Length: 355
Image (cartoon, rainbow, N blue to C red):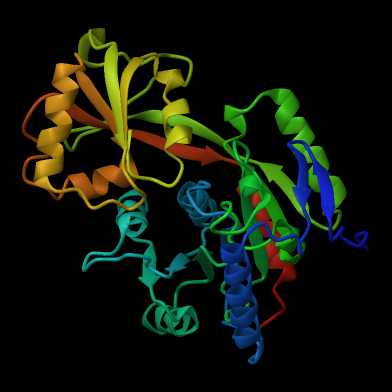
C-alpha cells in the first residue's frame, strides 16, 4: 500500500512541490473548485464499461506530452499481435475533417478506426457498433474523463517539465494536482532523450518510490526522417544526419503550433542542421495562406534555406493552396515514440475481466 501523500510539500527531482491543498492564487482556487464540482458530477454515475479492453492515454499537464505518438505506438503494437485497434478521442477544436491529432493519426494509421466524440461513452458504443471487429480501444486524452471505464489508465509525464510548475491552472500547467497520479495504473515518462541521464534517473526513482503500485516506464523520441512537399525522405539511421537535398542545406528555420514547442526544437539535434531561426504559434493555431506568406518572407530575410515543422502542423498546412509553392520549402519532421508498448498491452489485457 502506498504511503499517505503529503498535503503540504513533497520532494522531487526538481525541488519541492506543493501538496494537493496548497493554493497560490484566487484564480487557481476557482479552477480547483470547478475541478471538484466536475469530479462530483462524474462520480454520480458508475463508469460505463465497453465490451473490449480500453487503454486510456492521458496526462496531468496542459500542453504536449507526446500523447499522439504513444497512441500510435500502442495501436501498431496491437496490430502486430493480429488485433484490430480503434481510437476514441474528444476531438478538441475539431473542424469538419477532425482536429490536428485526428488527421495525423489517419495519415500514420490508415485503416484504423478513429471516432471523435465529446461524449466518449456514446462514441465508444458507436465505434463498436459500426466496427464490431475492433477488439481494443485506445482512449486519447482520457485521464480526466471518468465516465468511461478503462482497464489501464496510462498517464504521460514529460521529462522536460514533469509537474507543470507544481501549480494548477492558471498559476501553473497542471490540469489537476500532481498527487492525483495515485489514480493512474501506469506512468510513462516521455521525451526521456531530452534530459540528462541523471535527471531521468532521479525522476524515475521518485515516481517509483512515490507511486509504488504503478508501472513506470520511459519513452524516447526517434526521428524517422522528413516529409517534403507531400513525399517522404527517411533518415538512414538516427545517427546519420540529414542535411537537406543533396546535403547542401544546413541553415534552417523551425516553427510549430504545439503545446511544447521547445521539445520539438530540441528534437532537431539528430538531424544535424543549424537552426538559426525559430517561430512559435499558439497550440492548435489555424494557419492561413497569409501566415505562410509572412513566415516565408521572414525566413528568407534571415537566410533560411529550409523550414522544418511537425507532422501535426503539416496536416493543417497541406490544406492550404500555398503550401506546396513558394520558398523556402517546408519539410515535416517524422517522429515516433519508442517505449514498452507490449508490456502496457499485457497489463491492459490482464486487467480486463472476461466479457
